[in-house]
Length: 391
Image 1 (tube, rainbow, N blue to C red):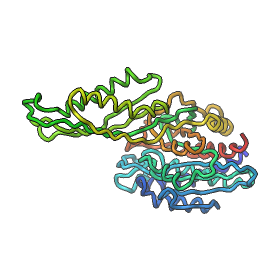
Image 2 (cartoon, one colour):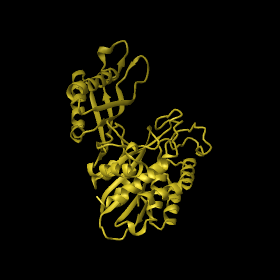
Image 3 (spheres, rainbow, N blue to C red):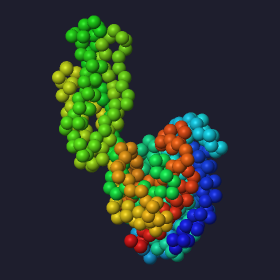
Image 4 (cartoon, rainbow, N blue to C red):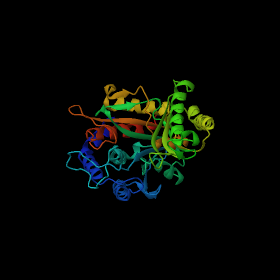
């Protein structure tokens, strides 16, 4: 069966590249993936899968039935949305949508999902259980996974697999990470309220800009002194606005930022920890505040057994040299974690890096992928799915 999976994937390679290039040329932003969903539906239907559209608003679900000998249901999730970035690559199949680009590899993810469905649909009786393919919208705004879950895509699911491209890993290799893969990502909006006054008489006012600066400094210093250094926390204030004129002391400043953490216990404690610091600074200088802390995506925690399944499948299909163990988690976020509230799962990194030229990072207008990685991703996912009922 190993050779059968590999042969099918290799035979499909030209078609997979065609699919990927079509998707890359026609990117759609989060929540607007209508054409992409229609294209995905067409491919899945041609493979004989049962297809449901408009799941998670504009998502697609395809089910491939096995022979019913094993009741466990495996889900495979790939995301479809692009980013609001103007592409600057020299490729012939460059984005046709001004200001929209597949700069995070979701065109490759979708192609890997479709390729896996195309391969497994030809295995027939070799599959003892059902596979549910989830083609998700709106990952980039961290909402699509919840939309899909709300529409019941995790009902009866026993395990789930996912994939994400990684330009720093060369094509032909698969990155494996046991345990924490990505960070929990929360958002905060903080407004400091003081009292306005003349810039020449600061003692008669309560300077919201100065107090905001003290608050930012206090938060950053407190991370290094009060948080466990073995459980990292990153707090970034990315936007700040306030004031009306150079000689007028500002009475209000609004800040927006992101908070990243890896450990669930740390994440749970962060809102009250942040508010205690903000409250202390504002009280000291006579200001008031309004803090809106919004929970975002949790940390992706890869299941050890399923991650082992992926690793052994890579070794079986591609050889031990194709496995790259990832030593450090990313503080980026991935809403794949939302599915892990309902079933254990594992996400692997698909190497898409070039050896002969510069590899630009994700979300860069010059980001490109080595298309030879598509077959690697399909072989890995298809073999892991096939092996799921045998472990």
